[in-house]
Amino acid sequence: MMNLPHSISRDVRNALATGAPVVALESTIITHGMPYPQNVDTARLVEDEVRAAGAVPATIAIIDGVLHIGLSDALIENLAQAENVMKVSRADMPVCMALGRTGATTVAATMIAAHLAGISVFATGGIGGVHRGASETFDISADLLELGQTPVTVVAAGPKAILDIPKTLEVLETYGVPVIAYGQDALPAFWSRDAGITAPLRLDHASDIAAAAIMRAQMGLTGGQLIANPIPQEDEIPRSVIMPHVEQALTEAAQRGIAAKAVTPFLLQRIFELTEGASLVANIALVRNNARLAAQIATALCD
Ligand code: PSU
Image (cartoon, rainbow, N blue to C red):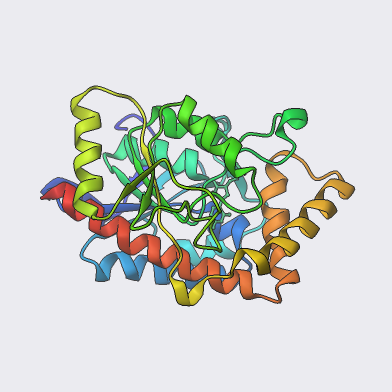
C-alpha cells in the first residue's frame, strides 16, 4: 500500500491504528447502481448506519488515479454527480490508477482495496454473479473469483434476482467460498427474503461469522466469506411481485444487445422504472441493513 498512490481518511487511519472496527463500502453502487440524488443520500445513510453501530465507514473509490480509503462528504457528492466514471473491477483497477482516471470500485475492486488497507469486513447491496444465459455468453462477474481469493467478509443481501442464482452458488462452491445466510435457512435474493433455495450455510450471530473468518485465516485458506443478509421483512418485495419485472428487463436487455459491464446497471435502471421506484426503496433499505450487520461483525472481530 505504501508505494501506491493512495489516501486514507483520518478517521479510518486512526481506527486501523488503534484496532477499532472499520467497514469498507463500495462506490459502484453510487455511480452505476442508483440515480442522483438518491445515490448520494444512500451513501451518507449507509455511512451513518456504520457509525451508529460503533464502527468507522471507509467508502472506497479511485479519484484522479488516487485510491481513496474513506471519502469526505464533498468527494462523495462529486462522485455521485460525475460523468464518465469507470466501473472498476480487478482487471481495470491498475489501468485506472496508472492513467490518473476516476473509477468507482465494484465488489471485486473494493475487496482488493480493503485488503490492501487492512480492512476485513465490507458491506454492499448485492454481489455480481453468474448471469442468465452464461452457458452461451460466459458472463460471470469477477466478484466471484475475488471472493475465492481475497480474505474479506462481504455482507450482501444475497445474489440479485437478475442472476442465475443456482449457477452462482455452484461457482462459489467451486471457488471454496462459504455462502452463509444470516438468521434463516433460505438464501435471500436481494429484493426478496427467499430465493426459493436453501443456503449452503446458516449462522445466527455476528460473533459466529467473525469466528469463522478467524478460523479461515488460521488455517491459511485464501478467500473471503459471503454473508447473505435478508432484506428486512417490512422492506421486501416478494418474489412473485419482482420477478415479472426482472424477466421483462432481461428480455429488453437481450433485445438491445446489452452486454458485459453494462448489463447490471441497465437491469437495475429498468427494474427501477418498471416498479415505479419501489426497487430503489428496497435497495436502499437492504444496503443500510447490511451496513449494520457488517459493523457488528467488524466489532466482533476486534473483540
Ligand atoms: N449492489 C447494488 N447495486 C450495484 C452493485 C451492487 O445494490 O450496483 C454493483 C456492485 O459494485 C457489483 C456490481 O460488484 O454491481 C456487479 O457488476 P457485474 O455484474 O458487472 O460484475
